[in-house]
Image (cartoon, rainbow, N blue to C red; front, top):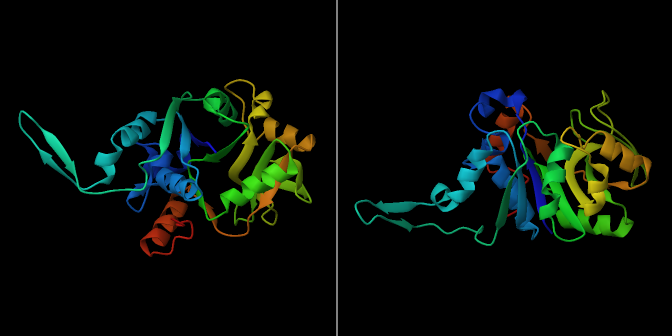
Length: 257
């Protein structure tokens, strides 16, 4: 199944790291957090990616255009007939990465609408370029196919604030972005979507987390796959440090590959 990743935001709350690069390219260990997210999907068998570029998208383009050089040990032979010898192998040789410029100021729903022409098949996966999890992606797909609605989101119980979900069993009866409560399931940002989501997206100013998801919930088309394991976004410098401490200690729960 194809994976769409939203990579175009400004990352203003992590300005220490995003002044010169987009947030998905901020490193956890020696790799961008975007790489960690893609490795998680690939570990579940999903290796066809569509990246929605915006702010400093050229940094992401350069990383993938020069992927071998950026991730391998190598020997350069200079001179009039230069050559490169790569000494490393990696598991990403069967990945497909589509890079789409979705605009500098386009909102999340608008970015998704721009890449839908690249999506093949009835359903696809969607996430943001700044959060890692050990959630079972394939179990969420099976759940989505079973309930038959247009949208599934992964619901988590975090320590902070994201989209509040009012649940009726597994059906989401209401959706409210960023409430004050800390004691409810919230939107973890890992979605399974039917391509008909495009019918709910209108214009570059469309914010996926507002009217589209609220409308889907009101129509009984939005369901929640509950995940009680690890999930963590990188929304600020404290969270950046936390993820790097976990990785450096060899205790990163999202490393399932």
